[in-house]
Structures are given as structure tokens and as C-alpha cells.
Amino acid sequence: MEIAVIWIPADIEPSEPAVERCLSHLRRHSYRFAGTMRAPWETVEQSMIDGEVDVVVVADLAHLPPDRSPRIELATTGDDTDGEHPAPDTQFT
Image (cartoon, rainbow, N blue to C red; front, side):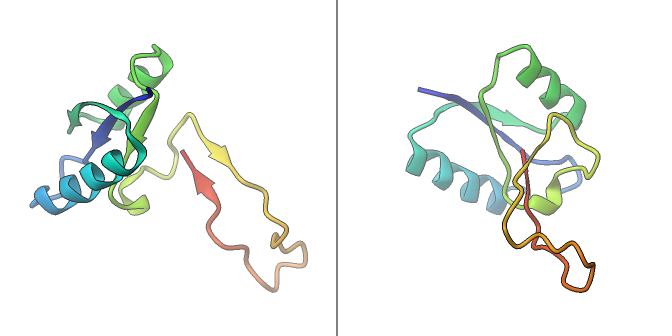
């Protein structure tokens, strides 16, 4: 069973709606819940690097810092090379 934490940025208030949304996600995926983090992203990142956390659950992609790492991107067939039609947001962590 994968170990998961909920990460809520410190500036998100009230945090309860985001926590409830994340808890629902955890239950659907049967993750082992290790707690909620309100620490800076770098602390969460280090937990992943150290192997303490397998999954970080966020309530909204907008909560993630744009320059975060580690980072996984999905190359979709909808990627547009001519620049006229931007590809949908395909960035995941």
C-alpha cells in the first residue's frame, strides 16, 4: 500500500474543504494516509526524495508551485507543434 500525504499550502484558508477533497481521493485509492503537510514545498519534495512518501495529494493543481520538482509530464497526441492550438495542461506530479 502506497504512503500518501495531503499537502495544503500555508496560504490556503480555510483548509478544511481542500483537506476533505483530498481525504476522499485517498479513500478511493486506498492509500495509507501519513498526515497533512502545510510545510513549504521543498519539505514535501525532500520527503519524496527520501522515500518517506510515495504519493502527494493536492486539492487543486493551482496549489502546486510551477517550478516544482520532481516533475512528470505526459506527452499527449494533442501536442501542437505549430503553436496555433495550445496543448491542454498535461503536467503532473
